[in-house]
Length: 535
Image (cartoon, rainbow, N blue to C red; front, side):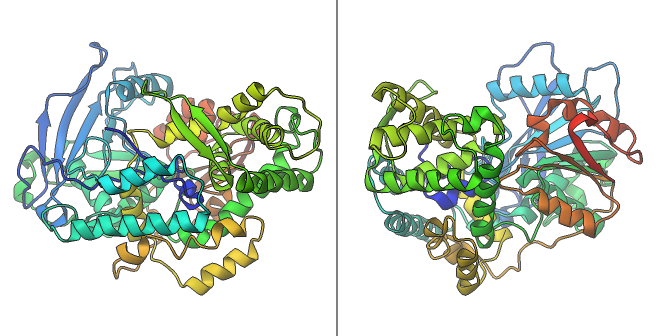
């Protein structure tokens, strides 16, 4: 199935990239929905190394909360060291799948070998992601986005049109209650799903490892566990006799923590402003980043960046971008807000920072603005611009992300705040205010939000490890610092040269993670050469 990108700069604050893909036509489940949770063992649907011990199944959720069927994969530990408490891995998003396909399982097997945690790994596609059903699609929205790729619209017009089409799609769904109800999404539902799943699998204890949005979901699971909350519509009759006693949550590992009460549209002006200000400050320290621009001060780099945005606003560039999935190349109109979105996606990883500055020089050459310090041929300039936009576009088309889930969960978890407060935040963060000013007005949360009060911030009652990157643009280390002050008993590891996702960017931390799991009371001090560790 083809995926479509929504190229508004606000959407780039989604944890993986600026992707927004919408599904609104039901593809029916293969089995009828049930009134309680049920777990069924199934054959696996992917190819994997024959030596691997992998079990598959489906968690069926109650009809009252959507009647979803969620695929589950259990990869059994085959290492020399073996512990009975599994690790349940929660991916980012919201809206990201667990990649339960052949390529993804191959990567998970490699991850297990490298991490060497000595434990089973449990993976499940959350509601509305990956292979979960029901799946939905909105052809009108898809057609609009296909046209949008080739158009240069002012940001406010683009947001307004996307808002109208998105609302139309949701209204169509509401007219057919047998399909999808946006109220069936949210971290509370997903946490109940996870706890119901673990009640079936026969483990006595389990550990949660969450990355980015997955940390928020992990914290909600911990809250429900501590408050002895019973998942909706789960009955003892639906649970196997040998699993009637719920397994105990043993520990939390929270990488790039995204806690309740943080994030959401109300934080976008501050997050975007802070992320780029930090990028300008850090980029000039590295020749690989600042070299193409020959700038030596953050202010000069900031001015150059804003000048590039202004140039693309008045003279957008058309590129033909290669598709990584083998489909035909796509024509892509690069204007100011799409360049901003692609740049934000790139600063998730410091290794990708030079793509931003090289693309800035390319725009200056192609448009004819800026200092005449680099002499690139038109072909070289386009190649440098494509190097920034091609990963952004292809990640945005990924089958592993579903933006309907992103929007529904985001609105359930983060109640929309007062518009005047949002505008005050825009004025307090002027660098990119022009790109933030209309984001609140055109948020789908205006018609998706229910009367809920959002998630509660809850102090974990189990040993907890926080991992942060000092350069993280989307889940700032300041959030983890706040939690450490509130929760003095948690451990916090801050990596100074890392942006988003410590366990991805610093493999040695992943390789040492078993130290924490094997001795929860000991100080966790992985590969300390570049660490700031706080206990």
